[in-house]
Image (cartoon, rainbow, N blue to C red; front, side, top):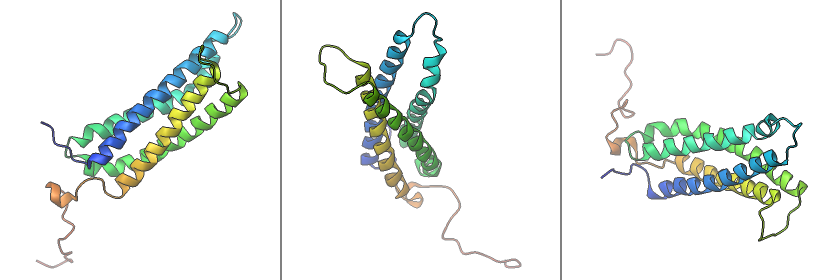
Length: 174
């Protein structure tokens, strides 16, 4: 059985991130679908892909980041990789914050209302915005959790890196 090398709360936050990712993916896919259905014969289908290009990139970048983090939770690499994850979490959070703003602005443009019989374009924007907003919150929690030291100290894990307790020696000492 695989051993978990991170605190279980951190692992649960990552799993929550995957659930939020599915919500954001569903909203973004529905928004793209509504966009392509709205096009007339003379319109270019690239308009829809260009409109959502950055949002698709941000969502899948978040997926790859979450999968890498979850994968290293079961390896003895998480302690080393946590310093690599922090800047990527910051970048993903920035992109997702911009996507959240875009989706909420578009949802207000198309009107917000509750219609249980049919999913509207505003519903797709709202779902994508909520998913991106929740992913931002998950990323903030992960930044705090990982930054504070989510795993055990390297000396407790049998880390074979450079010793931080060894005395410094100057030139000419033996």
